[in-house]
Length: 47
Image (cartoon, rainbow, N blue to C red; front, side, top):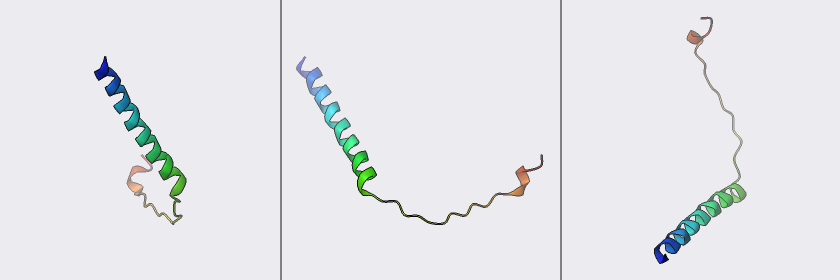
């Protein structure tokens, strides 16, 4: 049973670290606005 408890604790810690990384990226990183231009080929239209 100690190995199962150790496994669950390690998985819980890894999950908490992952959640903390996603939360910190969503909170502290501000996206920059920029212009985006996408060229669309006319070959696929009109068929």
